[in-house]
Amino acid sequence: MKWKRIVVKVGTSTVCHKNGAPDLRRLEKLCRTLTDLKNMGLEIILVTSGAIGVGTNKMHLSQRPESIAKRQAAAAIGQCELMRVYDRFFMDYGCLSGQILLTKGITEDTKGRENVIATLGALLEMEAIPIVNENDSVATEEIVYGDNDTLSAVVAQFANADVLILLSDIDGLYDKDPSIDPSAKLISVVKNPEDVIHMASDSNTKLGTGGMVTKISAAKIARTQGIPTVLANGKDPGILYDIILEDEIPGTLFEV
Image (tube, rainbow, N blue to C red):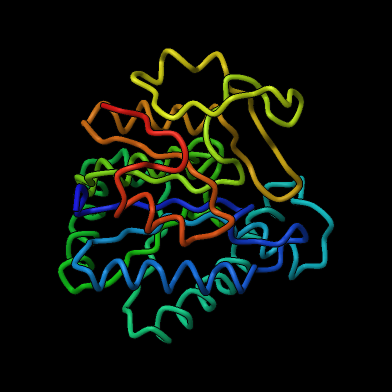
């Protein structure tokens, strides 16, 4: 296999329905696929979004709270539910998993960074799947990444990963906005993320944050450590088999 240690990032739109409730069918297949890949001898780290989305749903709100305190409350409520779902599905397939909640304050501190690297290594050594998320319940503007695309690239660096895979609600990077222009074409390979940053746009949905800008930025961060990035559609988590086991990647590969 071309890659051994793999960081997979899933966005809110992948793990949640539009109302914020967990997409159980998709999450079940994600956990089954990741466990199967681990059973093949691969080392898997999962970076997940969705805590605020799930919490927003449980709080019976129509969109992400505007105040910091309520967003933190939604994250605290949603993280419990999200981990309950992950833990159950992974356990159903006999896979250990462990939660790691991070903030920029932790990862940019020398000792904190060393502790994160040690914990990731210990979990992988125990053949567990680390599940990483930003600690939105305590993060403030000064110590927040704000999107898990960037966080996943940092985690890939810490873990010395072989590849970073970003699963989103789009098939990859297009030369134009496919939601506006039907003639838009998928770009299969990007030599340097700097060359395509002008094609990107931000996104801020009712439940999630991020967009193509953050994904290209994540690819730039990963590239500095020689880590390629793949952007693909996460509507069917089984696409991970194609990305990891097949020669032709369904999506966009950011080369190093």
